[in-house]
Length: 161
Image (cartoon, rainbow, N blue to C red; front, side):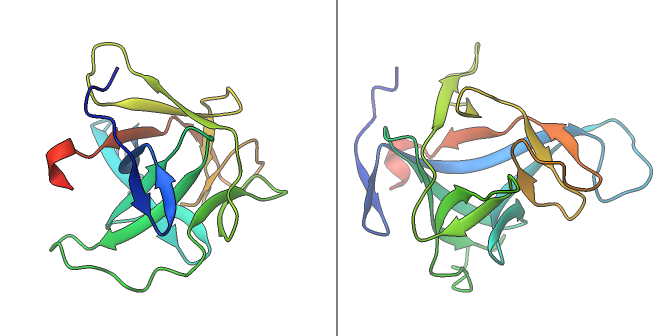
């Protein structure tokens, strides 16, 4: 249990936790030669989808099982104001994670054994997601060149607010 849990408001939506989404793969997804070195990739808003992003994109999670993106910062720490107005995470009819004005319910977070902060993300009880060939994220999708991934949520340190 997180002893520092307190509500945070992200774009007018009360969230229980705020943090970042990421996944880990063996090797570099951008290189045709895989060296099997574990690599961390952050996820964030990209156009109208959720995709691999070199920025630090903060996402809020609440007990209603929804995700909403807040501020996005580039690697220098500067705010990136190019994120679209629709920042709730929804899953469209093809399974793609899209940005919408209303969120899809059904996301949940579970503790990763041995880790105080890291949580595994699930959607309606399923922790298997797809990284599509265009580096966007999906659930239950048959997108081209897909590989299965596990998405993690790491809350921000409570004193970082």
